Image (cartoon, rainbow, N blue to C red):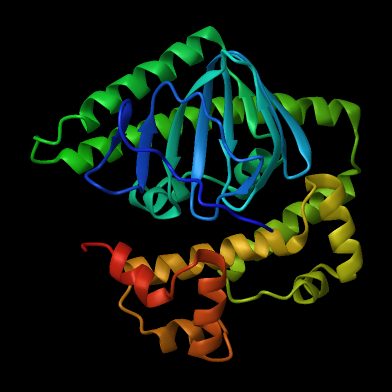
Length: 299
């Protein structure tokens, strides 16, 4: 998978906390990205305010128009981007560490993450659009004035609340689609139950199990069949969920405990600290110690 140096801009109509790129708001962001890109370290909320844009997102065609909210998830590939001359949008760039800072992980479920990956566009009602615009403008206003004593806490509290509003809007869409799915009986109840059990097992393992065949054994099915039903029901392979929960488990230990690299490696069943460090750097671009020094609670 290719990546490119596509980062949040600086300058007019752009707001951030100090010089940090962990959370960046951009107004009037009629973007002109590279023809093909994959952003490794950011998620991006895009709210289309006018015009049209179209692109392939991990192989699926995405069309954005006014009042559409699109969530780009880190490591996803965008290709064939094109937009109308009047296209404009608001952008919120955020790192995974910023999601930890606002504690959004405790509110999201694997169903939320899976749905967003499969259906990254939510069409907002006029009421929803106006509500998010109010949050956005308030965030911009607060980020532009760093004078309050609790400046960073105020900004992150507002971003957290806005994120919960987005999550609420998204879950309304999930509920409607699940009701439609049940009416259409697209997938058998047995397959959906197996998928639910697999996801629960991955979550309960807390990053300690990373082999697909071990989860398949617990479900009394073959690894091939597990991959097949995950692809059919969720359009994702088992390793995607395993990696997601493994990274959450590692980041939680690095940020909120004083465990050594050896202790974390042992706790999560890595062969040794070197293998653990290589695994983490492969998925984040930095070493576990660099991550801890930058993001550990209280630093």
